[in-house]
Structure formats: C-alpha cells, structure tokens
Amino acid sequence: MKKYILTSLVAMLFVGCSTSDDVNTDQHATYNTTPEALITYAQKELSDYMTTPNVNENNFRLTMQYWQETIYVNESNYDFTNRNVSNNVWTDTYVNTLKNLDQARRTIEAYVPTFQETATWPGIKKNQLAVIDIMQVYTFQVIVDTYGDVPYTQALDIEAYPLPKYDKASDIYASLISRLSVDINNLSAGSDAFGSGDIFYKGDVGQWKKFGNSLLLKLGMALADVNPGLAQTTVNQAIAGGLMASSGDDCKFQYLDSSPNENPIYQEVTSRNDFIAGKTLVDYMNTTADPRISVYYRGPINGQYVGQVIGSPGAFASFSKPGVFTRDATTPGVLLSYTEVKFYLAEAAARWGIGGAPATLYNDAVTSSFTDWGMASDAAAYLVAHPYNAANWKKSIGEQAWVAMYNQAVTSWNFYRRLDYPQLIAPTTAIPNAGGKVPVRLQYPPAESTTNGTNNSAASAAIGGDKLTTKIFWDIN
Image (cartoon, rainbow, N blue to C red):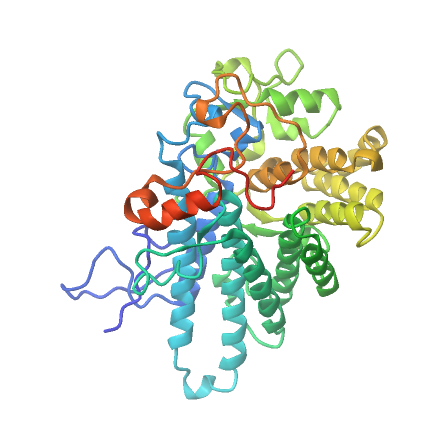
C-alpha cells in the first residue's frame, strides 16, 4: 500500500483521516491522507506560527515592543537561544507548513481521476496546484525575511537532498515573484479548488487571485530600496491584476471555540499571566490620543493605560494587559490584510507616484485599521490630528503601519526594517549579541549548524555573519 505520511506527529485537526491497522505501519503517521486534509493542516500550522505569542516560537510582539514579559524577560532582551526559537521557527515553516503543502502537491500530481472526473479534473488540478504554490510562496517569503539566505531549490526533496544548499535570498525573491505570477494566471474561476478544506477562502478562486496579487504587491514593496526597477514592475503588475478591495478579502484562519483549535494567543494569555503592555506603544498611543488603545489593551491603571519598560520584569497587576480580543478563542489569525495592502499602496505612491495619491491611500490605510477594530467613526478625527506628512513619508507610513499591524507582528517587523520607523530603541539589558540594537534577523537554527554544517557555514559567511544585526538583503538603509 502506498502511504502518504503527514510530516508532523500532531493529530489531524478539523478533518478526519484513515489509517491502516497493518502492524508494519507507523501508528503515529497518517496514511492515504487527502490533499484537503494536508491543506487544512498546513494552513493551521502557518497561521499558528504567524499568530502565536509563544516565546518558544514567535517573539515579534516583544521585538516590536507591543508587549512585555512579566517575570521571564529573556526573549524581550533578545535571548532566543535558550528556548531554541530558531529551531522551532524552522520546523513551523519548513516541516509543518512547506512539507505538508509539498505532500499535497505530490498527492495531486499522482492522482488518477475516475472516468466521471476526467472532464473536470484538469481544471481542478490546475487550481489546486496554484493555490498550494501561492501558500508556499508566502511561506518562503516569511523564511527569507527572517533569516536571509536559506534552503530553497533543494529544500523540499529530502530524498535527493538530505543536506540542502542555501540559496541567495535575492535569487529566491526573483523566483518567488516569477512563480507567483504563473500561479495567478493559472487560477481559473471556472473550476473548483479545495472547497471546505481551504480554511482561508473556502475554495473561492476569485479570492485566491486577490490574495495572490496582494502577495505580489508585498514581494514588490520589499524590494523597493534594493531593486526599484523590479519592485515597480511587480507592484504595477499586482495592481493591474486586482488587489484586496476590503477587509472582507483578508486572508484569515478562523479558529474554533474548542481545544485544540482555539486561537494560539488565547491559549497563551488565558493559561498564564506572562504578558503585559509594552511601554513603547502604550506611550505612543497615549501621546497621540489613539482610541484604538482601548481594544489593543485592557485594564487602565488609575484611568490611564500603562506599559512596562521593554526588557524589564513587571507585576501583572501593575500594568495594562493585552486586549479582550486575545481572550476570545475564535479570534481569527491574520496572514495578509486589506489594511496592510493599503499601507503598501501608500508607500508605492509616495516612492514612485504609483496607484494614486499617497495622502489618500495613507488615510485609507489608517481608516481601514480603525474599521478592523470596530472604531471606524473615530478615524476621521484621528487623521485630522495626524495627517500624512509628504516631507517625511517614511515616518508617517512607518509609524502608522506599526500601530495598525499590532496583531500582525511578523509583518510589522518588515515595515520597521524597510522604513526605519518607528525608531525603536533596544533595552539596555539586551544580550550582547544584539549589539545594542533591535534585531533585524533571527540567527540560523543551531540544528542546522550541527546537521547541515557545511552549507550553513557557507550561508553564514555569504550574508556577512550569522548575527541578529546582519541585515536581510533588502534592508539596505
């Protein structure tokens, strides 16, 4: 019997799967798994990583100074080694997400349709492979933006390449743009995709086209400083193809009100009192009289929202806490949002005059953020007090994107590195390896240096050293 093994040992979620009772099979693996089941699992793993505040995996709410730890403050001081954070990120992205997507691809490629399916299968297959590849493009961008040069061309064929080489990050970006362009063109609304197995868009091919073009916009904007020619071509292509048009187009993973399928933020903040408000964002929002502070945080202290100094421990009762939305198990995980898209468009307009008037797009982006948090009526007054500043557009867009991406911390980190705003200051207690700066990348996983040492060492040398301070290739300012 041919077996399709789910890479992770975690039980399949949301969907059922069949296993064999053969004593020669691995009872911890999933056999004959459907592509839909693999897609569901990969989407959940990807969303979990992008969403969780678990200090073993995703510390970007701390890095972006939205939150602070109460007792154990290693991670807010950039000590990611003790908890093997990079190893876990590598597993979340390469193993739990990319490998399951690749197995879904292999399963689809190997499938022989029934006689009744022969007429419709080619279109369905083309859509399914395009959707899978779009998700892989998204995931690879996350990995490159986190580490720099990483395994890519040899990454998913473990049989042929048990020790994959690391590809140049800029080459990976060029490949991702090319792949994504093909994927978008391959999507056809005349055929189905994955249906209910697709938690993001329920198989809606039109929505996947919008997501694909919006992701293309994101890839293009990342290259704005290092390769403006390719950046502008990519951005124009994305706009022409059709972007997200409202928050209804957001790419979200809908969590459930039952274990183990709750939002991972809920799992973290309701199990222990580990997180309090970070002083940097709280002070900024207090100073700008930003009404979103009431949904970002809870528990005003003597009528005022109070955040703790970044890197310093603090009593849970003495500071404001993460907002009520973090205590709702069904709060969706957001992978790419209309608000994010509007900020990219504002930036493209400011840089190159593409897509419209930068002030209008800036207003749209901020208004969209207020709308996301149920505060649309407050946006106009806020914008009067904090208008777009053409003379320092990076500050206007960078600071407002930082505030708006409060629940998309990985994305916020990208805006910060590209625009150099807000001007975050590392805590004085940060580990020496940070060089007195907020990290601009994660170091490679220790497991890579021990199991794939030759290729890992070559990659470390190629990027200028495996350090928290080594900039990703597109971060040149």
